[in-house]
Amino acid sequence: MPKKHNRIQYSKPNIPVHPSLSSSTGPTHHGAHAHAPESSTSVNDLIQRLRRSQAPSTVERNHSDSNPHPSVHPSLKSILQVPDTPAPRPRPQAAAARRRQRGPAGPPPPRSWLVDSIHAPRSLRAASASAESVHDVSRRLDRLPGLYLPDERSLMHQTLKSMADNWAWHMEYDQYYLATLPELLKQALLAYIAVYSPQPTTRAALELLFLDDTTLEDATGCEAITHLDLSGAATLKDLSKIFEKQSPALTSAGPAAPIPDTWDTLAPSPFTTPTTRFPALTHLSLAHPPSPSWRPLLSTLPHLRSLTHLSLAHWPAPSLTPNAKTATLASPAGTVRYGASDMYSASDGDWSEAAGILRRLGRGTLCLKWLDLDGCVAWIRALAWTDADGAGGVDWTGAWRGLEAVRCAQGWLPRGLDGDRDGAVLHVGDEGRDGAEWDVEGERSRYREKVTREAWVEREVEVRRVETLVGAKRRGRAGRVVFEKTEVEEWVDRMLGERSRGGGDVG
Image 1: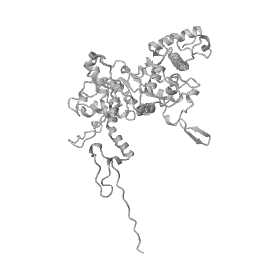
Image 2: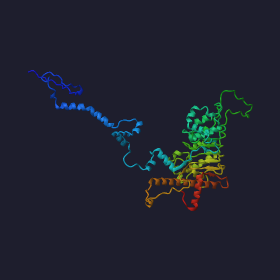
Image 3: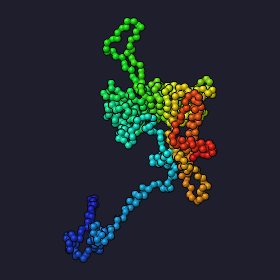
Image 4: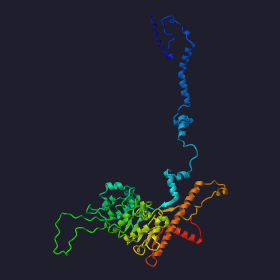
């Protein structure tokens, strides 16, 4: 029998037609249903036709519901007394976005966690720093006494400050004009660079600033420079090269020197004696060194014979091996320390190495009259140190017999040194007295201020003790050494005197 093939029947989708396109008579079909009456339409067809006819009216009703009030021009609303159109309701997504912007769940962290953390915002760290100290007086323009400085309200002050702030740009584009500045302005410009410039003073900047007329036309040179402020300079390793004046080399050109008749006659030497580049220099500041080292300073002493004022503010303790504090050597006698001092020398009162370096410094600066040791209170006891026999230490009656003043401030002022007494520490029992809530953060802040103030006062007591010891060494042999004080330090001295007489406490 022949195989039957099943033909696949594809059903045509029933696409509804708009009522306006449908005619009163149905479509013409071939067969028995060609003349079927219209009344034979099923109920489902009528329902679909009704839904299609009502669809446009639903859209219009929704549109009219969304705008219940007709729009009126804003200038007519006040005349017609039409209320303002209400704002649309927020979308559900906006509320979810606001929830996502909220912080983590739970109470906020205590303020002390943020202040003491290394990841605290800059504003909180600045507020914490201002709470610890009133004013940082470590960097200032008048570091060297007698230096010419223009008035802060003058145009010269603003010009020098702008040049220091943009010193790298001036080094690049004004390099042939900087050497022609008057020597008085060069001295002031270096002081402004030390305070306001983001880049430290380099050797290249000094070489360019102090060119002479043999190298550049109209250059003023450095023969009359008396004040040199190198605070924060990154040139300590090349310090001797900066101050040393290069000797001219022997040239092969030119006529030969005549032969003397007798050997007793000395021929003129083609070389000149090495001299300093700044022959008139009397005031030098090496404060705030980024990488301090005492070796370059000691090697530069032959070029600093004429110094009368020297600033070594914020220098570390004198040591020739500062990186070998923990290094030791094995010897047949046992383990010995590598350097002359170790990490426990300060606590043990062993200032032999520091006193020896200061003694060498004094031998190289015989004309010194003023010494700035701001920020060096940690090793101020080395000035008065002596060995068991009473020898050694700084030669106050020999090399430094002309030293008249020593400035030894701490470089910062703690809070509450103006005579107030708001630093008393609260106790837990205070809460039950008046029923007030215990301010934990305020108590911690006041306690930190009190501890900082007491530590500051103790360092000042140490400075006064050193002053007394130095004065005892000089008594009857040389003049008196005056330890310069600020107004706040003088107030501390008065309070210390009152405490010694009445047994009170400062702060």
